[in-house]
Length: 583
Ligand SMILES: Nc1nc2c(ncn2[C@@H]2O[C@H](COP(=O)(O)OP(=O)(O)OP(=O)(O)O)[C@@H](O)[C@H]2O)c(=O)[nH]1
Image (tube, protein in one colour):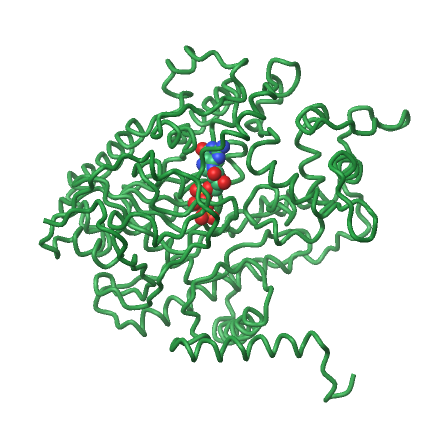
């Protein structure tokens, strides 16, 4: 191709980029300085390509100045020519070898006396070294690294929440808790302060039968994991005086369930009390040890203020739903599209308890394919390019007869020469679904893309029931036998009685409970003379359905005088007289 010949795509990308710069200038903000906080797990547009190019240069420069590479590279042996089983075995070995390299990026040491520029430069440098190490892992042909969060500003949100929290709550999806657990986060939290602890909040537990909860409880006890089963959806329903339909009602022995503290679903008040208790224990230990290791950022409980509980987790696990249920009214947007929460929020529950909601983060991990990440709700369905592969994940995990019952379709039986228990092929599933729904594309062929999107949405929302069993505890009691199958009429019922809110424009929600970062920081540090109290509202009128709107947050970047870190703050636009009483 000649030098002056440009491809249509190239021209379109450059045009888009120039348009963005123009728009940003008009809005009086710097586009290139990335004032808008966006999650970056893939390089999908020209801006990210340019940013990555710049980063690559910095990475190279960092490499030149520091030739000591902490990660051992690929041994050189190629995986081509291996059988799939052998390749998988090699991959497992390599994953175990490099498991310790899958770290959460650490914030470099800092002090309030540092200038913003110095802090910024240190953090960028440390982040690039982290990126470089992961890039080196990606070069290893035997390893598959999943798409992970690459935007430093999102990790900065995590650093901040980790530093200021006493207790960290890792929210996970009950259907596959280990997929969403990040073990290194606990290690990182303890590096910042040895008294910090992590609690696994096993959300969406309404989607698990009691027998499976029991097994997971056993597993967590065995591995000394602090955990609580919870359902933000059930708690929100209760706030409205409703009861969530239990798809596993027939199997669940409600009395047994209620009696056992390990397996029961916590209620809203119980969870708040438990979180406060755990966080106060940590603060007490810290005080008793006379530790000053809390650092400048953990001044809340150290100064005798409220204990702080930070909520962290992958996108779409239900952090916002949990916060909304705990607060008792809608404060953060809830949608089934991952990655909607872009900035951490501080919520003052009482004089003793403050909650902090961190944006969803895709932690680096091995092995999960892009399709698995989409099926787990971590990457948006919009990013699906290979719809058959994504639907195959669903077909492999949901038993054939459950699929047939939920959708009232008949899947083709395996051929006589095939294993009779093989999962349905994605193509069989999609065609049967399209035929039953009359989904036809303009080409006249079955509209598999449309069907795939619907199937994945149902899978993520729990309308197609599925769950993983704890490692080593087998699949018995799972789907084998009728005993553990959901009562499908209940599944259908829960569809129609969906009590969740569509995402709302936050500006329209009641004002006041969420403080902007600065004021909450000031209040917590006694810098504000104003006492902030929360008036509990009658939530029932706030959980009504509204047309779907995009979240609208006002963004500002500045330097927080408190800890010197450049942060993006959320300022809630004033709405009507809200429930916060300043007095
Ligand atoms: N069945 C069930 N669904 C839930 C529960 N909690 C949340 N969800 C659903 O999960 C989806 C994601 O919930 P969010 O609260 O927006 O998740 P998030 O972790 O804040 O997501 P990000 O903003 O992407 O970080 C929504 O469709 C919720 O309705 C639960 O306890 N049970």
